[in-house]
Image 1 (cartoon, rainbow, N blue to C red):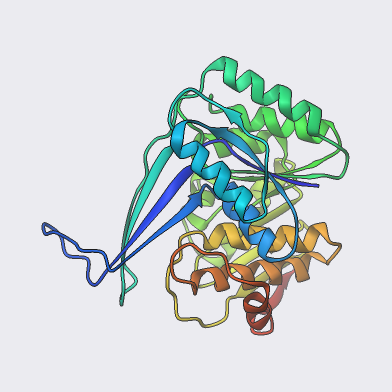
Image 2: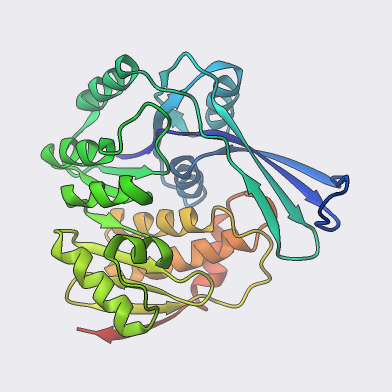
Length: 311
């Protein structure tokens, strides 16, 4: 089984405008509404790749109902804890012919200690050996920074694999529990390791620091330029295929889903990395935050360039 955990979900509203012009009224030519949250994005991408997952997290109010019904309508199983406050709404404004965008996120619904305890009780009933748990996104108000660390310890004590994709204090505390895989971007890796240099040697040093904390698999993304993936012994560098970028939001989540798709189905680390790059690139080439179809990912898979740079 694969579970995705989104503790701070959102309804994502995207407005397409002809041009991003400050201090004026922008008129949208298109509006897209998606079921937002990094874990949800992973579930949606896995669904496109033909892999089932169950989405967990906190939802509340009418917005929470829309999320739950929307995910169910596209074939994603859910098992949420309902909270008293309303689920947040995030807003993105994207320039139609350009690459610029504005994104405004709300902080999220406050989660009480009782609601958090209920979530932990739920997890304890679900954890099984060899399952995959993807813990992704920010923490909502009321949830302590060390929560991912506790979740990782709980998941992996039951023989399952925990994957962590977050940032800031939640990430720096989370890796102390030695998750199976983390996928920070280069900025997050810099903050995590204290290394500011962006050279290849510096990025390898970042990876080694993270491995030293007990994390078996590490991937660092430098966006559209390249990404690295390390098993500790082997390090690969992947250059994504050339695409006409439409919207990069959610591409990192799609990349993670592609990697989980490969790893969970028995592909090699290198093959799984290639699937991740292809899925992320296909997502970035799509307008809105729609996840690409399997055929779109396969087309780009052949164009992913991977070099073995260290053993």
